[in-house]
Amino acid sequence: PLFLPESAAAAASASSSSSDSSQDDIDDDNMRLVELQKQKAAESSSANSKSKDKDKTFDAISDHLNHQRATFDSLADFFDSDDATPDDVRPILRGLVGRALARMVEFGTATTATATASASGDTDSDEKDDSNSDNDNDNNNDRDTYRILDVGCGTGALFPYYAEAADALDIHVVVTGVDLSAEMTSLAVSNADDLMAEEEVEEDTTATTSSSDGDGDDVMGGTSRKKHTFDVVTDDFVRLILGEGYEKLDDDGLNIGTENDDTNAYRGKYDAVVVNACFGNFYDVDALLSACAQSLKPNGVACITHPLGAGFVRKLHEESPDTVPNFLPTRDELDALCSHQPLDPIEFEEDLPLPISLDGDDYDGSSGGDVGESGSGAYFACARRTPHSALPRLMRFRGDVAKGYGRGGKKLGFPTANLPSSLFAQALANVRTGVYFGWAVIEGSETEGDDTPGLSITHKAVVNVGYSPTFEGSENVEKIIEAHLMPDEELGDFYGQKMRLILGGFLRPERKFPSFPDLVAAINNDVDCAKAALDLEVFSTLRSDPLMSGDDDADWIGRDGGDDEASWEFEAIV
Image: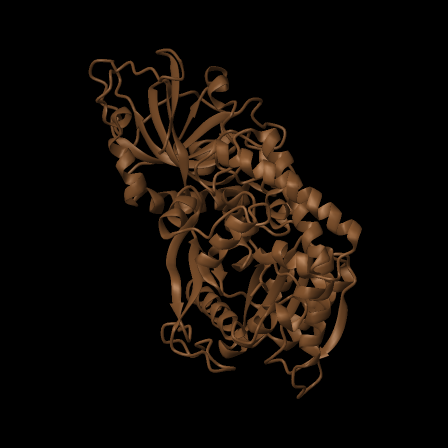
């Protein structure tokens, strides 16, 4: 059966709703994308790899999105029909959604209705936002509230399953569906309206459905126990979260895009991101995983699901690589995709048996039909959002500790070691501004009899690389390294001494905070996150790096630049 997003190209040939002209456009796009796909395959042996040429990647992704948009616009009526989701697939979808929400509740932290309304990522009118806030507060203040991002929502096929699972778990959900097809999202809004109108009415409550064009409508829906909120946004999910032009940013491999008012409306707002039956359609799966991670709150979950499984997607990729350029990841590939993301894989199933169990939770996803005893082939992968990510390349620095800008230990409450910008400007040119963590050693003094405490000892460090924008009027003129040390014992005056520094992890982009106390609170949180991360084996082993242990020559000079006064090197992690 051809009824899922990956099958769009095959279904297009059978669809009578497309005009001849639109079909010709799709065929032209297909031919261009086939050539792009061949070129891409020649550059990399992995179906999940992306081009290293930024301009070429940008153009290829834009072409790919245009193709997907035209294809799904022409197929919107088909995907809105009963043929798109046969009866035997519906219980599988129900089980996958139930399992995703169960993991969300297990690992995530619910918010109150008031907090949910104030943290809305809507791009719609103020009227709609006010309506959502009132409804959430009035009708759901007795239920835990969770926010869900439905990636590639199409015509809203999963919406009823979110509502059903949420009611079974006794929670309230605010679901934001995202799809790049305007025809699809228009139908998704209509279907959300119908869904809420069909709820059993025991008392007057209002549910709000809306689209990103601000044309939201209030509809009468069931009791406060059954009311949920659905927003629909028309956009490419990755560019919505990472920003336009994310493909051209940086050489550091972090792939976290741009923070601005548009992207921040969706970043860090969601308890779950569900990528159902559309993972294979994304051109750049590294960027897809990054967008998932940037969307999530701490401990939120990203779930990749498919009711027909990895074999089905592999077959579609082989038949139509222009529409389905990637496979569903194996467990090893998922681990690799998450290895440099703030994501920790917690569950992976390639052949879920039916009914889909939620490991003892009340809602097992099996209600609504006889699903039989055989394996379903359904795919379910889940990763939890962590505060940190491992860098794709280690960064090593050595230089004299400078006096800095007078806002170190006394003002911030941490001994702060600054490496002078004048000596490290070249090294930092392609390093993204942000908060990193690693290990630092203040070299011992060559002065005879100097017993300054804390020297020649490895200390945990949380490190800001950037301009310190919160200090308005006294921002750094140049990008600098500010290392906040976390000594386990007393640390004496180390200014003018040599510091060795290795950075292995990333916490967050550099931000401007509204006040100095807010900055201190953020640094305290960074310190807690860095301390916990540096206790993990993947980062704790860096403590014995030759640069830290002193096994290297005392006058260590990095391979990538500098001299005995200031030196650096970058080592890619394979």
